[in-house]
Length: 424
Image 1: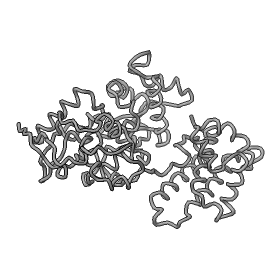
Image 2 (image 1 turned 180 degrees about the horizontal axis):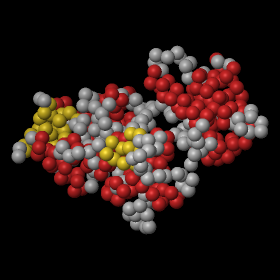
Image 3 (image 1 turned 60 degrees about the vertical axis):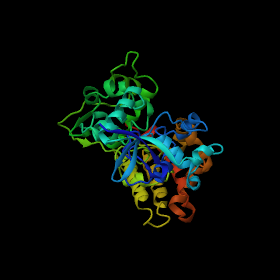
C-alpha cells in the first residue's frame, strides 16, 4: 500500500473520466468535462451547490486522492473541488456556456492557488479508499456502486446496470430510481418476468415492441416517483400489481420464451447522463433536439400505427443526417402529419381532418402538460389554426419551413391519437 502527501500544481492535475458519478469519454479534456458538467445542469456534479458550501476559501482538510498514471496526475477523488478551482482560473470558459458558474465575483484565493496538497496513491489503494468512503457515506447510489464494481472490481454487470443501459438511462435520468430498495426489491428477476422482461447474457429481453416497452418503464418511474411503490405500504416488493392497478387498460403478459423476443435497446436521445461511453459524450452541447410527438406512443396495430412509426423513423433519420440533407427536408414531416391525421379520421362519418380535429382537440389539449400547452401557444397552434397549418404542409412548401411549429403540431396530434387509437 502506497500513500504520500505531496504538493502538486493545479495545472498538472487532471479530472478522472472513470468517475462512477459521471463516467465519460476518456479523451475529454478538463475543459470539456467541466463545461459538460455545468451545461447539463445535472445533480451528479451540482457545482453551484458545492460553491455555496465552499464559501470564499478552499478547505484543505480533505485532500484530493491522486494517482500517477500514464505520466499524468489523475484526481480519483475530489474532482468537483478541483473543477471549481480550474474553472475559476480560466475565465474564458464562461463564454462557452449558457450560464456562469459563480453567481458573484470569483474568490481571489481560488484564482491565486498554484499548488494543492494531495494524497498520492497507487491505483489499488486509491480505489479501495474511494470505495470505502463513498459506500459508507451513502454519497453513491446503487447505479454508481454497480458501475464501480463492474469497471474497477471486474464484477459482472448487475441487473441494475443492464437496465440502465438497455432503457436509455431510466435510472440516471430519474433520481428516485437510484435507490437501494429499487435495486433489491423492485427490479427482481421475478418482478421483471411478471411484467414481461428477462435479463440474460448481459441484456434485457422482452416480448413487447419498443414503444410499449418505453411506456411500461415510464409508468414504473411514475409509480416510484409518486411513492405508490415504496419501502412502506402494501406495494413493497411488488411491481405487477401496482402497475396493473394504476393502469387498468395496460395489457401485461409474463415473459414467454415461445413468443417473439426482442432485445431492449432504447435510444438515449434525451438522456443527459450515459453509462456507456460514446462519441456523443464528447459534445459540449446541452441543447437537445426535441422529440417528435412529445413522447413515444403505444397505438393499436394498423395503418395509423404504421404511419406514426414511419414518421418517427423519418424524424430520427433527419436528426442523424440533417447536415447532409437539404435545408428544408423536415417539411416532409409536416406533410406526413397531415396524412397521419387523415388516416386517423378515416373511419368517421365525415372523414375530413377537420372532423377528427374538432372531435379530439379540446380533450387532447387538456391532457398535455402546461409546458406543452405553452409550446402550442408560442407556435400559434390552436384548434382553428392547426387545420390550416396541416393544409399548408401539403400545398405550400415555403410556408411550412418552421420546424418548431411542426413539432408543436406533432405534440397535439400525439395527444389526440392517444385518445382515439391508444392500445393501452
